Length: 430
Image (tube, rainbow, N blue to C red; front, side, top):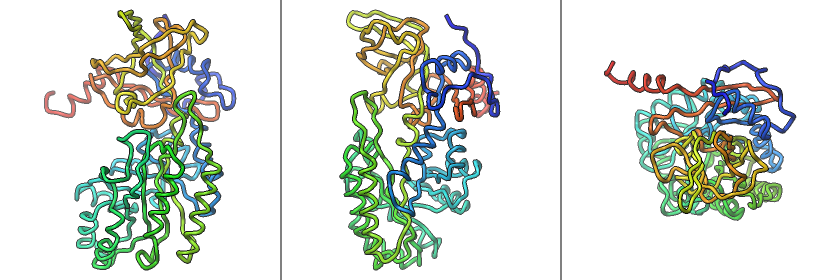
């Protein structure tokens, strides 16, 4: 049995571990060292990979006025966001909390966009006071702005009327979605804009997360560009085409040819700017593409159980700490770091939560798993920790960011006493 210890590193502790070789942060040996040092469950992020994924988009899309705003909802780890800030990234934010955190981390307000989603009047005023550009996705909110804030500078989100994504719950276009203003409502939008003397500087659309077809990107772009004409919106500074770029999750899943896709994106937008009469900025808001492959969740097996038809490997993490398999039936690769050459067997990899569906993998062939082996759950950098919670009163894992071969940031897991103390301290029970 390995010796378990509480995480003891803090921000600024850079030399706690032997440096991994360049580009080798997520290799088995180094991950095992991190698990021994910081205990499990543990999120490990390759900060350099996240920055390179951000820079990839500039290499893929040959347009000189491209701006990439990382989707903060995918991963709000301050260590990762600081690296991306220094690389020049902007942020796509979706709540007042994200806006305040982005500003606290030093992102200039000019590099932040706030995409509204059923916000309250109080939330609207809170974000408005920060000076961050707001992206409005409903006629109802637009009418309130025209009445109470005439002359306001803003962006408008339209429903691209294209459905795509890796799960029906992550598709954000089409009839069933709550997001965006219908394209056919453009005349009503113009009337409200004129009545409030509003300045529309940007138009936005987002089709879905984990887009399965390049053609969906092109069609959604074309649908938005069709209404982005000077007669409708003469003051445009940018068009924002959202994110949703796919990354492979399964071992046999092919990568998108983003070089070819980026060339077509640039061609379409260049043609649009010629029709519009001047060059505009082009924005994208990737989250999954930047963060997903840069993260793993390390968990220790504590129980091997042989049922009649299943062998269960029970872990010290659970679905509140990585919810995508339960929520979306998502596939995440699992590696047995401790016994990679073991004889392959079929396992259900289960968590420690009081729910039958608490599985990271079902009927998955893996090298023999033994109690106290360390498993690495891959593609855990996007929409994993950020969607987490403390169901069953189990604290969220420690997070470690590795950059330049060094541990650059750690957010410690709360002890059970600390977690309960915070919850009780929020009420009037003590």
